[in-house]
Image (cartoon, rainbow, N blue to C red):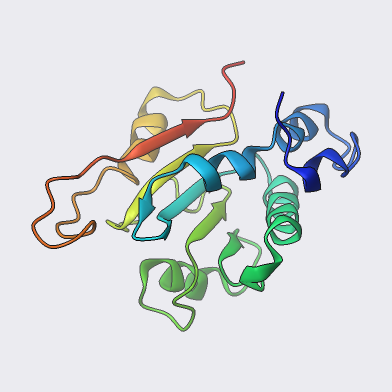
Length: 166
């Protein structure tokens, strides 16, 4: 199984949870960065649905270790206990002060009710047991966004990257 070098050397029990460690050691960040839908030359807006706040923060930390060139502004965690949560959502929508925020890692804050038509990649890094909630989450990445891929583009493909099926 392919592993990003930063993940391969990270140690097997970094989080203390076998399920989360499995997600990290599978090289998930490398997968979506290498194979996710791009807008221009860079990865398109992405929501990662994390299992817990600890899981979300660990994924952000790992991303920042793997991609230090982004300086911590490209991928950020949006969780309810962060007093900056609303301003981070604004940043992700493109209405805030950080126009570089492209990857949002969230625990239940972006699952429903957030409209970011530019979002083209969804990463399910947690199990979802509710059919209704699952389709709400899919809706985060299926908004039409004319001209996202260029003027009068016929390319409206959006992608869902699933982490595991167990």
